[in-house]
Amino acid sequence: MEQKKVGIVGLGLMGGSLSLALQAVTSEYRFIGLDHNQQHTKEALACGLVDEIVDSLDAISQCDIILLTIPVDAIIAIAKQLKGLQPHTTIIDLGSTKEKISTSIPSTIRHHFVTAHPMTGTEQSGPKSALSSLYKDKVVVLCDMQKSGEVQRQVAQRLFEQLQMKLVFMDAKSHDRHAAFISHMPHALSYSLANAVMLQEEKESIVALAGGGFRDMSRIAKSSPTMWEDIFRQNRENLLEAIDAFEQELQTCKRLVAQEEWEALNSWMQRANKLHEIL
Image 1: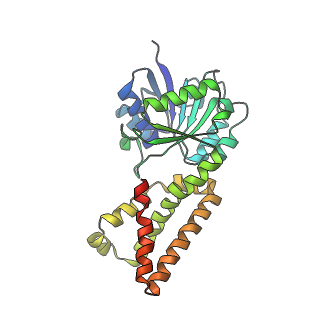
Image 2: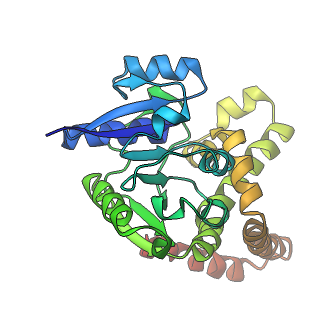
Image 3: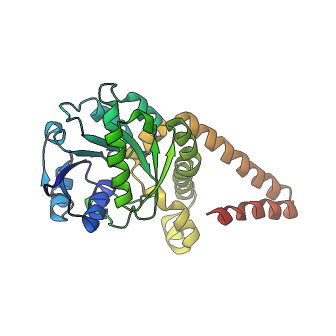
């Protein structure tokens, strides 16, 4: 059986991990990569993430499946450049925001697109950070599926099932609000925590005293500022709402401590404990 061509635009953590995961379960795909970072293309080839590298979108457009694993602003830019697609071509973007992407895709090719958000990742980047287990048992949110063609819906769902992911369906607007609270706001807090500590503490004190809790909370502050600037820009209104909600809780904590209302503080903390009854 002839292998299907999978074009991956963006050869970093998400694209590389997806290739490794599919290679582990099937031989039906041939992977073709495109990345503006020449070092990434060399590493992707050396790590076996792709079978070949191309240098143009025209070459990628000839693939059966096209995966856009690049920053969210770049996804919109690339979507407007893709042309010459075959009727069956399926384009899947893995951006962390969905509404602006979904509504910015040219209407002439919108049926080719499946807008998806795998709820997974690490603070690492680049081809060498790719993990074959990154997607396994994680949730992928598929948005505005009524705008995708029947063939494209089937291809995308099968691919994510091959990755052993849990499929959730949602409209893009709802997705972005939920993502603001559960994913985007925590990144804003982690960046804020890192900056606050570095402004108040010397390097030696941070190294000496930083325990597991601080390392866990600040870990995602290592994430790409370029990528997260784009995400914050696209989901600005929802992110501001989420930050406001967090600020209210932080002010509650501050007030209870300042007024030495220890019993009320304990109850406030107990409510927070219940989160992990859900997770």
